[in-house]
Amino acid sequence: MITTNKVDWSYLAGLFDGEGTFSIYQNSGNYKTTASGDKKQYNFTNSRVEITNTNVDLMEWLVKHFGGVYYTHRRAKSVHKMAYSWRPKGKKNTENIILGILPYLVIKPQQANIVLEYLRLGSSCGTERRDVDRRFELMRQCQELNKRGLSVTTNMQNTSDEEAKRESELISDNESALGVIQGDEITSSLA
Image (tube, rainbow, N blue to C red; front, side, top):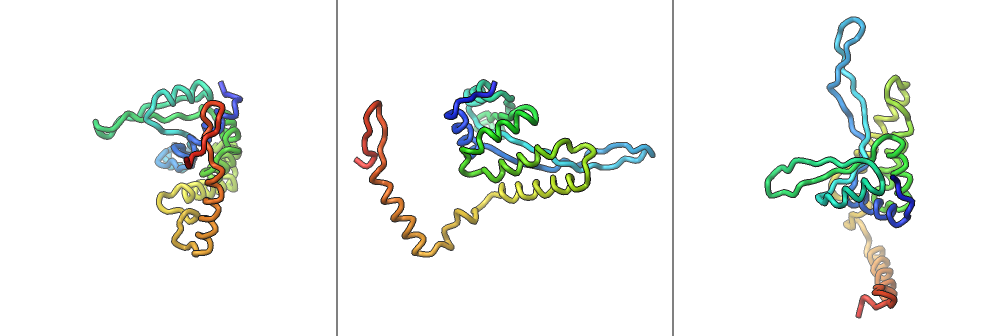
């Protein structure tokens, strides 16, 4: 069952921004025997859309509201909590999930769009060379966006004092309008 509730979709987008993955990866090492009896290695790509978390209640909520399936991961050490990964099942469901969360994504809309384009290329079996090349290009783009480390857009080392000052003024202007809703009344969060 896929929910139509906008709050659920925005929550799912937040989960993907924080703990989700949009990735394209290469599978290699698969062999197929040719008509002449030779073994030929095939390299192909695949995509993955998933949320990993240590809370099984969250996994059950995801399955209930968005379908899909979750998997249990073995713990690397006995001190680690059990981890779970939820994934939508099937290409069409995966497309629908991405389309449902795209308007709400803040951190990973580029990765989501790349995986969406990848899914829409169709089956990887017997595709034309241009489609194969496009798949590998999309994989490269997605991997570049998913690299760990400092992001160019969040690295403040190259920010001028004027840019930092403008950001600071913007934050202080907005702080006076902040409030917390408690029941039916709004309370200032600065009090």
